[in-house]
Amino acid sequence: MSFNIKEVLATLGLEIIRERGDEILSHCPMHKRILGKEDANPSWWINQETGAHICFSCGFKGSVFSLVGHVKEFYEGDDVIDYEQVKEWLANIQEVTVEELGNRLKNMPDYVSLPKPIPMSEARLALFTAPPDWALHAKSITAEAAEKYEILWDKDKWILVIRDPHTNELLGWQEKSQSTKGFKNRPTGVKKSSTLFGVQHMDKKRVVVVESPLDVVRLETVGITGAVATFGAIVSEAQLKLIRSSESVVAAFDNPNTDEAGRKACESLIVSARKYGIEVKFFNYNGLPAKDPGEMTAEDIHFGLDNAKDMIYGEGAYFVKSN
Image (cartoon, rainbow, N blue to C red; front, side, top):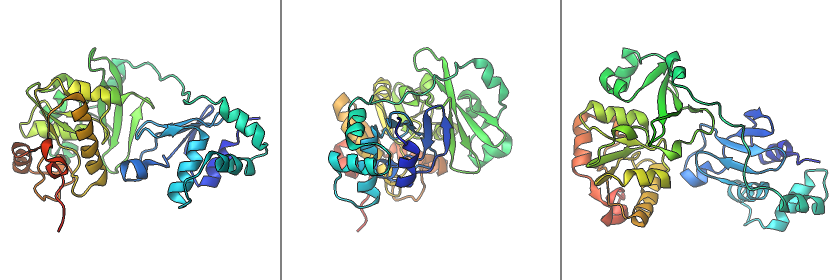
């Protein structure tokens, strides 16, 4: 008898968004704890047969035990949940004995088996068009900059191409809505963390690292060439190894003074930079309310980069504490 994972999710208040074979897609329950914001673009999968789960965005993963324990502790305010409590909780909502459940969980794999992604082909990009002038104007980017970074368009969505950093092979793309904050990765599970957007044009003297691919194109538009994007607030080890090939690194994540995820990204980058011997400076927002460089004037962008603060100042390099 398989776990009744759907019943577990329902009891925890987790909505089922889509099913693919034995896999269930839902909003990641730990996004808020890990990134400081709710999961607006679901990439958390759980296996109905084993209960193994993983979020391809924030990295939250584990067994059904970790799922129940973390959710009940974080969202329901329970004390730290131990193994026996979780085992009993699961047994109470399923027609399975505690002993049988314990044996099953002991032999459970610690990964989620997702369907293999459909092979990518350059011909797939022919389905998309160049971005319309009104969309370019809305993002304050030029057609020339968009063309350089292979920015494409599909109905009301930006198509942001993802390529292998070494072979330039097409890995997939990210679809980013113009009208909403949502985005989707194609294929689901594409390994964005293994590469950087714009890596083929990366400046080896001074690379500016941003979260969004469209911010890379905005920087190109105002004369800042060779920037790269991490596709989010988390910088992976693979991305760090690519970044450190540049002589100078400036991190321009979402404004850490107004965005908690941006602040956590800066904190994490300092730790990783020290580990890999990378000297990092942080974009100087100078008290500006802008969310990221993509929302700033050309003058403010140049000021933020020219006055970037060295990581030697710790939190003071990126965060202005209010009095």
